[in-house]
Length: 210
Image 1: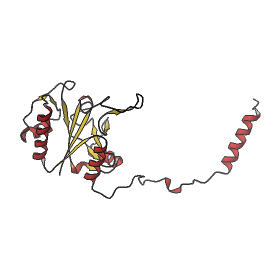
Image 2: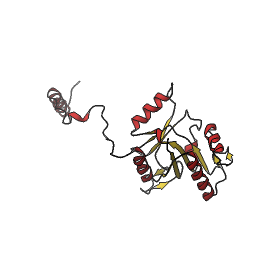
Image 3: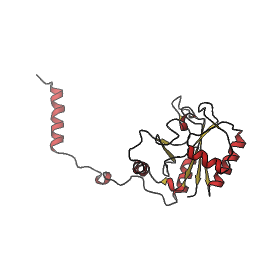
Image 4: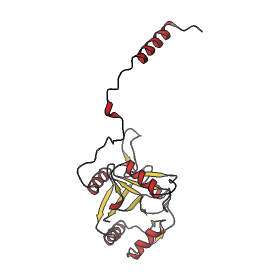
């Protein structure tokens, strides 16, 4: 098979380049160190700042009683009557604390959904959820409003820390791990930002001390 002169020239240049490899200009670019270094502030503050920048609605609660009062105020102000929650332990805790709301089994017709989470990522302001939770795969996606109840002990700095925590928690890694980073948004149409297209229009995070 005859090789054209142009192709032979290209192959010749490739062979020359391989015989004299150029040293890597960034010897420190490889390794296990994170590119993103922690900021000099508390994780709670960092998460709150990043979560709020993404149009998330953040609230810090000193205890569960304060979280329940804030939930009551939110539900009353919005006139919500259809709250969806699949996590039995969470429902029992809220009922025992005196939330006193009626839950619906209609996810698609609810006003808001309430879930817990696996982890909170401070650097990106993300909520980590998994299919291993009783809430399942769809609760945080199909409801128009997602309310997450979390604790400061669930805070980690980076994504790798969150994934390591989930891996340590379960003997078998959940089939789905979701990073929810603020309300759903897209700018695909004429570069105009639209919120709430493929998921909730609002995301609340009530972080409880402890």
